[in-house]
Image (cartoon, rainbow, N blue to C red; front, side, top):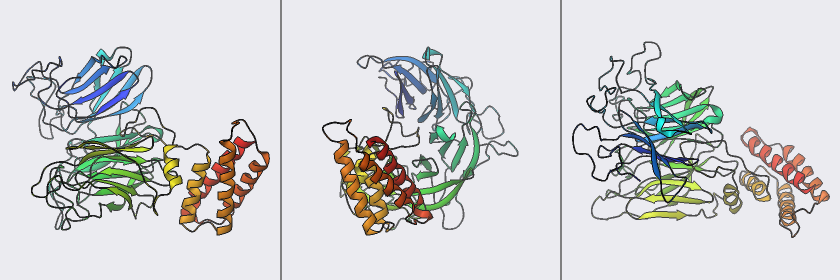
Length: 482
């Protein structure tokens, strides 16, 4: 590959996209770097590689941007084009190096600040990749003034300073609902991406405890957003017992009628030492059916698995913590990111390498729920900044996961729970039998009858969604056995 990265990498088909922010990167991928203040050889932006031959990746496109590319988000793709939102967080380049780049305060319509870049990549000829728009999504809705959102500074007594909003650090898209969530330095933002080439802002929120809005993650069905605050920039101890619980934490919002509605904060409950850099950082959804579960990196705070199904009452249900790199001095280390994929959690540890972890059953998470998460339908390529609704197949273990949850909540009476478990055990044996084409009409009728009884069990509104999902799973299993 090419030096000068420090940013996202995404794969779309045979193309790999790479964010480049550092000033030493070269357009020609040379190893000698760039030391001049202004150079036509410097590259900062989005590289495009052809990886159809994995042993010989080739750079086939390069889009220069004014502030480099710290992160990027694949918004949409088909056999004709790929649309990407680019987030540059660094300084604006000199105009002598890239003419269109203007580093001015609000008032100059040409400024490279207060914008995101919309990049279009033709699949047939990636060399023609280009910026097609740089919408001023942070402008004031009424006046059009560019500094229309948080301008930096503290929020009043007993608050802290928040960075001004002149860029997004991270934008996560949920194409199915035509929305995106931006963690944009001083604000959390909800975008309408009905037209991927022309994103528009539909809501923005601030928080007196957030120093730097860093990342955004939707839940399974795109009805909630979990934002993180990277207070201290990732290099400082921010999880000490003396640190406020709403500083360097997560903020959880429900999406209600196109608006972000605050529900709660979450911060790891275990205090960390003064030699451990610790703050909220990258993570992803763990696709447990019937629940909203998130695994997250906290640098030397380790990994935390959070249940935010009840948006107002998030709880930690699992964790992994190696302890400090040093007991005597602050050494930057710990988990940069934690991503769930195909039944495992992959933790990228700064000083110690890659850890691969598996969830273990506990009072908070059953063996069936863990196994059901591994059965979630997903694409072959994982991209945490492009999320889709998660679905699960109608299998005995998925149905059993719902039974476990309803039993945990006290929704099922003992007799119905016992019958459900027995029937699901029989379904599992039938479907895993020597003849996968075997049918069992009697068992199918039994499952359908149980589905009706589950619906009639009188679950309250809080558990109605799980009851409906269990009923559908039972009917789906019945259909497979007929």
